[in-house]
Length: 319
Image (cartoon, rainbow, N blue to C red; front, side, top):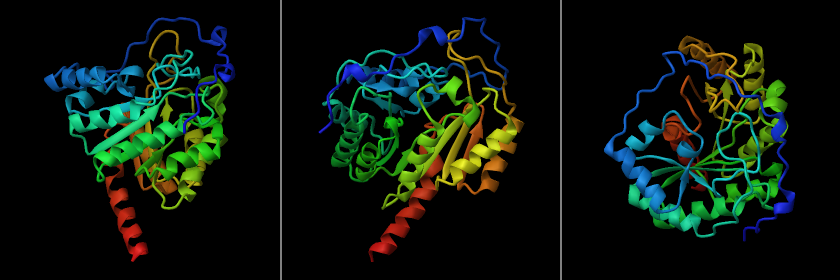
């Protein structure tokens, strides 16, 4: 059973350390997204609101929201809309969480049925106020989805759960098809970009997923444009690959507001070709790199062939 909220262990966020407000930078033409509000966009938005569910597409101001909602897909964000961390790249609200909604997994499964989805991506805010970091709600959500449709494919993108191996194991034991946790940035920038997080902790989570049996597809992602060098990107690829991770996504950091970190550089599409090449040479099975690439964007086009290959391997082992 998931643990109730313990507000006394919510980490304090030092608001004074946030960057001063500044003028917004003009985006290059290759990053701009054409606004297209299709009828399906409003349908998905209405269904989520009616079922009191959150999507990371909305809460994190994803630039691909109109495309994904327009195609009838969404990345569900569970465990509420308030995050206990204050990452300086993220637009999700930092605030004290409002308890724990134990009915959320059932509502989410019902909504997936209403949307007629066969592939589901689930992520969450960070809940440092919960003893298990929200792991049991992740697991129950997977179970509820499979009760409604045993064939549904599920990808989870978990927070670091403070590196608690038991909590991570709770999610893995529920049997997600794809197990993801984002490293977000290179080691040198962690203190500025992800206060409260550690690169080693994130790498250990990916390694734990790789060592679990039966192993799901292991995936991570990180941003560029925060001041990293190509040498640091190359080193991060190597560190990730050593964990057994199979899929990496790389996308441009876009500052959500004047209160967040500013973009240091906008990478040209041609530069992502070089980043992708380095990733494949490092040994990854799939590298998705581009200005608007996000971890959950067209997620199952990234993992489909790997899932099928692993399922065949599991079938062979069971004979």
